[in-house]
Image 1 (cartoon, rainbow over the protein chains, first blue to last red):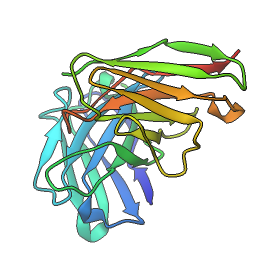
Image 2: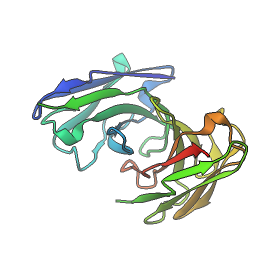
Image 3: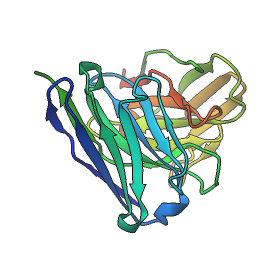
Image 4: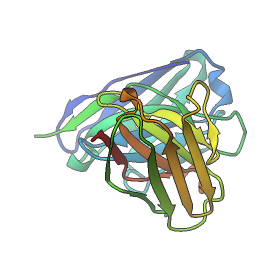
Length: 122
Length: 108
């Protein structure tokens, strides 16, 4: 299993970024996928989850209405569109794979990518 | 939201000794709890899921116990590579996941 994030960078407050996570080594469409972030020197914060089919999406209150999670099964890629970025969104963003291929339920994360850094600053 | 509280924030232990880390949930999470290890500059690594099941490739010196609101992670004989930050993670109210703030395990 390999998860490789990209798309991070420096953006001004109010700006947008789209993160990508290229997945390989497993049947991508069978597993829910999530984004988890970690601010510098801080703990882990769940951001968003999408079901294996892509039909169900969930967001933390802190990003609801600003971030959109999606997936492209043909490309084995997970995305996070981030709009109206704020200073408090600055973090290392990890994509993570669900531990079990169970439709309609969500589990622990058995694999994580190395992360992509988002910096929000004027 | 289920709040996960880990203690202590920092634990100083000598190599070869036992370390016990605690995680408490603000409401019952059943056995839907995982532990991760994170080393500087690295992604978290799954150690334990379902409160007590070791993930693939995790050495037997790592063990997890508990259910409901009280959980522990024990490392029976610390090796140099075990000094890291450990996070607990509840997935009972999934996918509205929450994590503990972490326990830093440092060399005494």
